[in-house]
Length: 388
Image 1: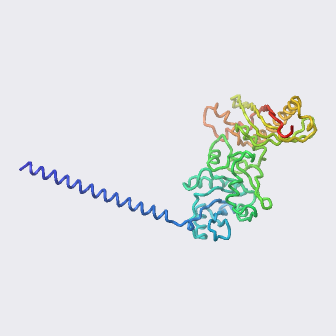
Image 2 (image 1 turned 90 degrees about the vertical axis):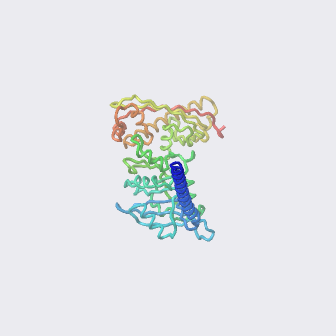
Image 3 (image 1 turned 180 degrees about the horizontal axis):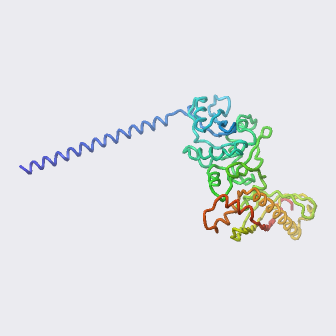
């Protein structure tokens, strides 16, 4: 009897377990169906109901408000313009996006964001970091989004009609892509900006652009200090930063010099660069020795030696003069940066690595204010290109 009872009890437990398993299976299947339905619903959102922002611009209005402008490509063949732009005044980026959605009647997304612009006044007020941090935390925004400073108004730049560039989204994205032909440091995306602005060794830089007639040009490079846009440097000076940072292939070197042969102008192309930097490791009397070796082709020359550059001796004399000119230019530029107490090249790293303790921005400024720099350049003109 006991055996029969135990058998029935075991059978009941098995049936109960089977029932619970079936219920759990049904529940899981139901949840999967719900998730699938939601996913299907998301996938069925029409493309014409989504506004995919290509460029976003921030202009300074006052200490509490900014002007936010977005450029949205229009892919419909019925659209009268290739780009739709909206502008709102807002205190917060998120609120501005909500206001733009009200104007556009579309869901605004940043999956296709390619360029972020800040006007010069906005950058000088120290507002860039806060905005980029907000975008950096947005899962829709990629790390490779390019950034630049605009001289006047980002709104005007986005709304202007460029006759031979019908789509401002592609125009700006192509212009700001780091290229060996544009002599500015490729530190132009939001990931690199966040890295340098949070690193006590570096100071951020980014391209500075302006609209001339119906063209947009890179006019220089903006240098930041303490989170604010501080000063502008030229594209050739930005090329020095690239060389010191060890970039192997540089943009063409445009050199103007007077080294005993009157005014001379030359262009060295296909430049290969090698740099060695040594520190004396001293925090009280810091000194750096920078040795740069460059090789390239003399593609153009204008000066009194124009008809003499066909012998080994004449080329060797020109190389010596180029060395002197570059050493003077590089040292003068680095001394200017030290006076500003900014370090876009990261030279203070050669002292930080020997410092025992926490390295701070103030310590970096202290080193820059008293560091002595010795520069040696060795130029090798491996051919004279079309001059021969």
